Image (cartoon, rainbow over all chains, first blue to last red):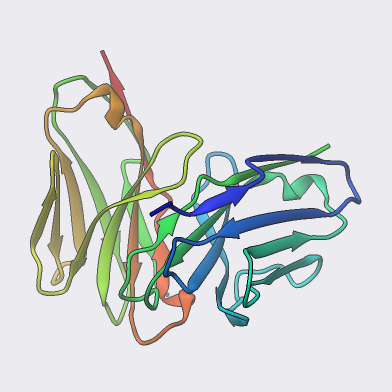
Length: 115
Length: 115
């Protein structure tokens, strides 16, 4: 059973470009979470999705950021018109059950660098 | 306000020594507490998850304790190895449903094990 997969592992964008980060949850997991981690900082929750639905997006910036988890295919975190402050590691996690009771399994992360 | 505070912020120990990391929380209601290990450049990996009724849980050389009365948890590492060098993150769930907002992350303790 493959773990949570994220791609790309490293992504370089220039200011103003779009960044698309992909996450494939563990097999059998229908709950997906996105986190952002700045250097030397803790993980910050962004959004929680369950197949085709956004359950909690309280950690998402109001502009430029969006996330989806379609019926088929990976979850996508999309950042439009990136700025230097978006440079960070973005982690995806998945769980089989609701987050309050079930362990989340994390992917290896995508390191976004905005030039 | 729900918060998770970890101490120390960073710690350096010699290989073979034991150490204890602390986690204090002010999360209510309480559902469970988790410890994660995050190697540099990798995603967090779950070590333990404890519910209200559990005082101690072990995973190899890692032993987590929980005092729900004082709202404190510790992670004890026995006979440290170089591979234990990582950040250790305490996460508390306040339960109450599926909202990810119920998971509160600490900033982590950065442990360095020196030969």
